[in-house]
Amino acid sequence: MKIENAFPIEKFKSYNNSILKGLTPSLLHTIENLMIDKTYKKGQNIFIEGSFPAGVFYLKEGMVKKYKTDNRGNEHILYLCCKEELLGFSAMMCNETYSDSAAALEPCTLGFIPKDIFMEITRQSNELLIRLLSSLGHEYGVLVNSITVFAQMSVRERLALTLLIYRTNSKKKGMLGTAKLNYRAKI
Image 1 (tube, rainbow, N blue to C red):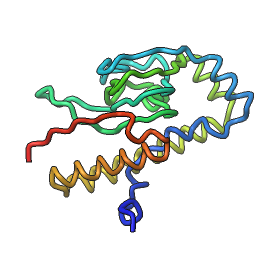
Image 2 (image 1 turned 90 degrees about the vertical axis):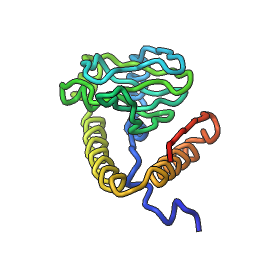
Image 3 (image 1 turned 180 degrees about the vertical axis):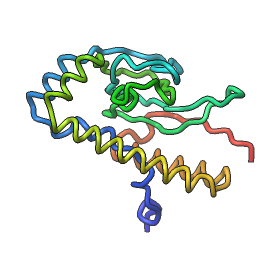
Image 4 (image 1 turned 135 degrees about the vertical axis):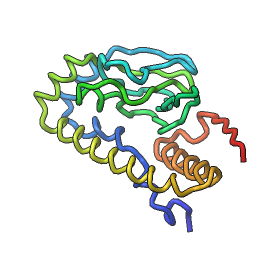
């Protein structure tokens, strides 16, 4: 029996990669034409907690970490974003500052869609708006599950779960082994 089948991994994974999949070809073409490609070096910030979003990012190549920094300056990784995921839309949709930061774990290419253009597209497409709302609701459930489970786990168990989630994400996207993650935990 595979470990993925024994543990409900789906409750801990975001589905931001399915937001654009299945949209009408004309809408996808419009979105693709409006994207401005930006490249980021390993370690470079994409957006920073507390800043206002100027648009959304679509991860074309590479891997991005979403993280928070505590009052001592320590980073806490919240999520690893893989190819085809949409980043930064929740803060933009709520007209709030970013609640976390995002940085490239490896060289990345992202498509940037400016806020005014993205908001106009959502006004014109009920399907896209429903997908965004569905993703926000799912992210809330992922957050609740993570807080509940991680609060009860040891450091080793949290690390194991994080690696398991990463493994299932990267396997489904054909990216297993493309990023080397170095973890150092004091155990």
